[in-house]
Amino acid sequence: MTEGQPAGHSLRCAYAAGWIARALGLSAAERHRLHYAVLLKDLGCSSNAARIAELYATDDRDFKARWKTVPEGLPATLRFVFARTGAGAGLRTRVAKIANILRNGDAIAQEMIETRCTRGADIARRLRFDEGVAAGIFSLDEHWDGSGRPEGLSGDDIPLEARIALLCQVVDVFHARGGREAARAEVARRAGSWLDPRLAACFQMIAGELSFWRDYESPQVAVQVAALAPPEEAVAVDEDYLDDIAAAFGAVVDAKSPYTGGHSGRVAGFAGTMAEAMGMAPAQRRWLHRAALLHDVGKLGVSSRVLEKPGRLGEEEWTEMRAHAAQTHAILSRVGCMADMAEIAAAHHERLDGSGYPLGLGASEIGMETRIITACDFYDALTADRPYRAALAPDEALAIMEREVGTAVDGDCFEALRSILA
Image (tube, rainbow, N blue to C red; front, side, top):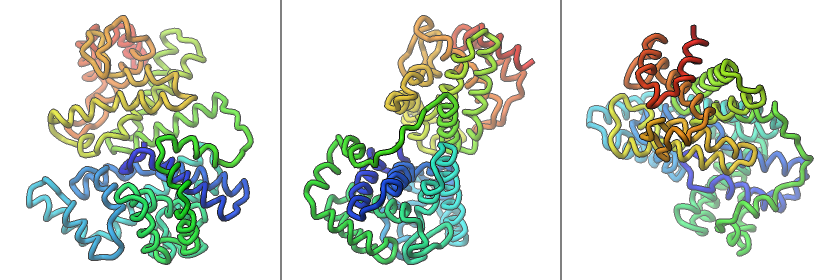
């Protein structure tokens, strides 16, 4: 799931990058770096979601999607900012937000892009990709003419992986908006400014091939991406690597909101300790720790305006929030090494009395692993700051949880949690 981008965006970008790599005659090692830099280019996007929602008083996902189609130049940028900032908010809020952006716009843009680029590159390293992949992600927003960020690189000083990734991003964003000709026209417009003119010319040659568009527009584009991917040495996905993968994506989720910083790691830590206290075998505890790290991955699809709302959620907002559990299941079930965690992780808002979500499971259908994650998630949510209240003291949180024993919280899990906290 890529924030602010149409479904399948990363796969289509990787497919286009594969064609470009083949046309350029890149080596297997270069194709390997490019493939993963493009697929993972948006790893850091969640880190500026809350900041966008705060600064522009708008839905971060919609803002990101529309921002990528803004024409080059200050007039178009200002028109976009005036139109989108505070949409639906009161006049006073709109005026204050726009005034802040006009005063501090350059510093704000630098801060957000630098945060996103740095976070994305760091997560790629945690996933054990090499510096070529990390550099490609970090420099995604650099422009050929030097007008980009975060370092103002220009020309061939920009890593090739980043130059191709940006080109493929422009292609997909404008293809989603207006089809093949819109994509080709935008690449032509941005050649020499945003885009490497040699790469832009290469794409225009490729775009003349009907076979390129046939597979690009196919629902089965993932198959073609796999066919174009370079051969690589098998990498053993051992237990340590699985731990690193889960921790990296837990960090992506937690970066979505300042109120969830460290949440996934804390829930996983509590879950592992609780499972040990309850006599769970080491291998099962390790597996549970990973599932706990990933239990909120579906929140990447929730607007930061909903996550950060200081008051009660409206009906539509609550529906969107509740959907994160089903999204967690959908995401994890598509990843081979995580598919066995999908049901456990996605069920952490189910309740023993059957009134939970997403499936309304009853006590007999909720396993002990899920019950552990639920208790840990409940406790950490109570003891952390939230938009609508300050963090509760541990004793206060336990008192609230005790009243929910047998309905939302498993009694054995509650006693184990109270014991380890003591």
